[in-house]
Length: 441
Image: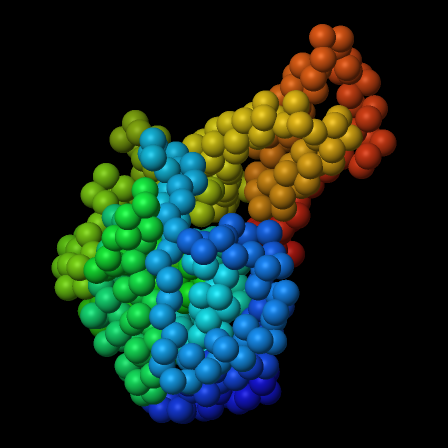
């Protein structure tokens, strides 16, 4: 089965204009469905039917055969997704997620495995989010190198308001038909989009949007923005720019860099119109054009102002200097993200002190701090990582000592325990220097 999917990707790369008219048999293949079952995590939240991976696997072959038959005769109907909310900064209700039932997750992954090779061959290099072999660090690296090496003087930050809730189903189906000519695949995806949301005991029809939490949702959102923004920027807007222009997108977060302010201002206007064509709006309070580049610091100081900064993928980018006073793009942890991660860590410690042992708390806290450093411990950001570890240690020590009336650790004792279990050390985990080996500047 994997060989067939590899061939699909090879054909998509060799024939960019090819429309695939026979794909559905890959989705209904029992071996593919079984592989999807095995790939799914068993600890994920269950959907409206409450069926877990373990329960579904008790009669696995029987269930998969029945699912394959229903798919083949187009009798498969996705169940409504269960609405859940997770904490979101600035929102009392939280970020809405749509949790699919386990069987629906299998079908979503089967469709994703078929479509992904086709669109990976089509997606632009400026797109990084939710793509195999691409990470936020890759996006940050490309952005930093572009600002450092190219003639960039302006950055446009942009944010799409409630993108996942506003994806227009009709436009999405039109975009899919550019490469997918199998009507059964289109019909299946349309049914998934319109399956509805179960919240407070009521099923709400899905007229627009692709719910976050769905396995297929990241791929569909990338397809939508590939046609709505990526191709438009590179094939149409760039051609009328007077100077250099570059674009970077990670899921629905994106920004553009320009040599001339006129091009940046024109992009702001044209982008609003372009998004409006596809029923999307920009969040005006998060959209702006700033001067940023090798001359931005000196120009700001001449008029008595501070050089502007921008935040992207959790990092604040600012105009720094090397030891020889040359321009360098630098990054530090966003203040908002820094505060949010410490707040979540504090909440976890508070809730865990009465249900976990000291050893369990230390092991899990170590993993959480390790995860933070794996993302944020990049070039030029070690001071903020050290600050995070220091505060996290203080918070952990405080709540460990509140497990009982008797004080558990002194600060020295806590540090000794941390050394014994191999506490994470602050060091560069990802080299994102725009100079790389030329860091001797």
